[in-house]
Image (cartoon, rainbow, N blue to C red; front, side):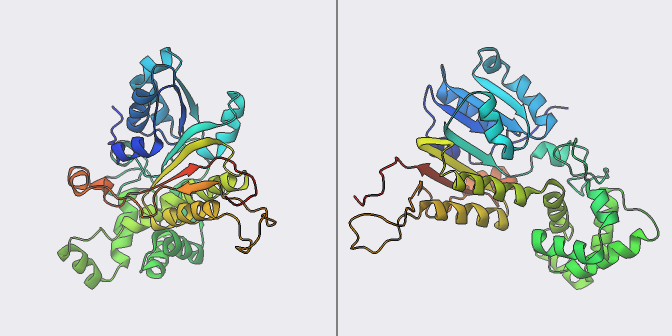
Length: 330
């Protein structure tokens, strides 16, 4: 089945990445290759793109969609998680790049055609692994974790109001039978949520009662927040050495916890010397390494959201690696 996904905030991403011919970029989350293709079009004829994705379906799709660029050796594909970016660059003998993109959203293909239970709109195995070679599935978490741990996942990752009764209902149900499918879990969640709240959601056209639970499970299965934080901490610890001076980092997030991690890490890397204003020379040795390009987070236009509802929660943040100026105040 064709890999279906609509790239979100495509024009904004390409603009903030400042894509130009001959430069080197990394798309850390290929998905449907929409962003990758747009980047490649801008950096040709002698630019180079490193495409990374932990989902084999995305890699196989990229091999087809981007085959002309592959044949011209303008792109290198890696089936890995983006936390391994340093290893990939080392293997390619690349010290630094001109731009890095992270699109942290789940793809339309994974929701509609992945067959892994990301969505409750159809009856699928309760898997939710983006990398099908990973060990832990959503089914393992639902059937194996304690009630308290389930509640914590639903509350922290899904910001679910009814985390406790939902966790209790899951544990009670699994004593009779294992919970194996997405539709089965969705029914359990609906049964656990108070009727008044369910009716209110329908009347006000709010999200399905199981939406936050499925999102929380997906985040837990794929360790999304831990890996994002590890990635951003790595960039901060290395003083953004993975980026060339003037290089750009762009992150598309779809969850408040993801956005918070990105926002705080960029802010920390933007903050420079904390010595008193009267000091002629810095003695704290704290340098600013990034310039925040999105003081106000960028959101998709109303027109894009109308055409692609999956874009409605997207937030784009971007930063630029500043040139080294030493420890003197200018």
